[in-house]
Length: 99
Image (cartoon, rainbow, N blue to C red):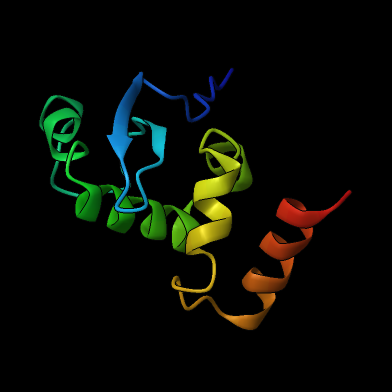
């Protein structure tokens, strides 16, 4: 019996303007917001507050293969705000800030 594994992929990007004035492309990944489909998620992410919450949820729950789709500057900016457990915070700190 063969199994087929489907890895998480981005279904597109949404340009979002953050309160700092920076424009970032946030990837559309199904499953981060439980009750929003990809069609519903696209207009929602134009709001900077929703994009911020979406990115924080990704930092808290998503594997590295999803996080690497996000702009690094956005992840670095929200890392402190995500209130991660120590182990996950250390791992993401290593992955984001390694030289």
